[in-house]
Image 1 (cartoon, rainbow, N blue to C red):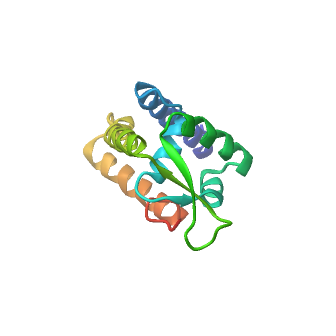
Image 2 (cartoon, one colour):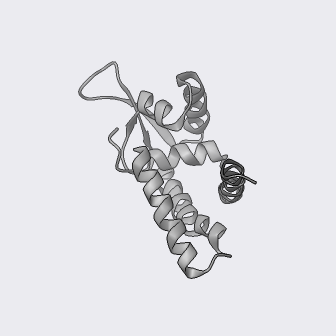
Image 3 (cartoon, one colour):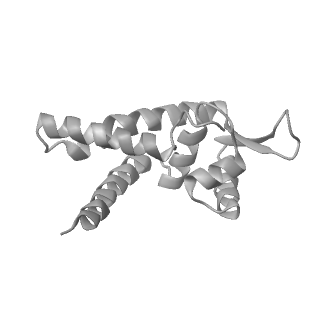
Amino acid sequence: MDHGDKLFWLSVLIQRKYAEICAEYDLTPSQATLLCAVKDVPRRMAYLAASLGMTKNALSQLVDRIERLDLVSRVGSERDRRVVMLGVTPAGKVLAEAVYAEITKRLPDIAGNLDADDQRDFERVAIAIVDASGVSASTPS
């Protein structure tokens, strides 16, 4: 197997673990991802679509579904009336915090069979990849 093949299977492992955790909270992976993306700060819908790799239409449909669950709400920007922001409701904040905590606690389990040095290397490389991608909680809305 080549490097690309290994990355494919790593992606499968991560997605499977992520879906398992999300299901425990009665959320789809897409719903959990969106909640976690807005848990700390409201974000522009256009920014969310781009950073989550979704079309604006697909994002709107996802938002419609979790808005009906009273987990998120759309609000206008105070600076620009044309901009639509998405934030969490109080119930959404509680759920997002719980899901996010569980995900960050349990996703590293995929490296649990590695020795301590390899686990540290895996963590270092994962951090470097995410930091270089520009996608993280600290990215501006």
